[in-house]
Length: 132
Image (tube, rainbow, N blue to C red; front, side, top):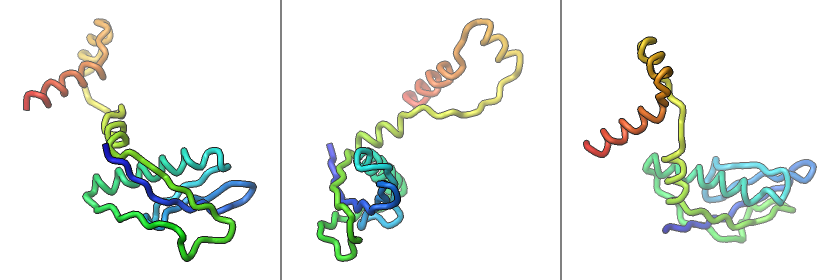
């Protein structure tokens, strides 16, 4: 299982909050209300960012190690570790809403029969996928 660690910079903001960014990933940012939530917010942001990069076929940069030349005064440098394969599995298998169009009579019949349309469609599509 892949394990990636990159260093985030936590820059103090107002009232004890922090802006979070990565020297290796321009444009990947997050925010936390306090240091207690910093790791959760940083892990989530980095995980989503790397997932999207891999979906787009972009190469991941090699991690840069501190010290960083342009670290602001009072900032905290924090290692952030993610497991991209777990994140990919979670995101690829999350439930999403989608609209479908059915004749009214069919929807009403399914309702009277207690048929769960989402479950039926999902089961049918999985069977079709496995037989393709």
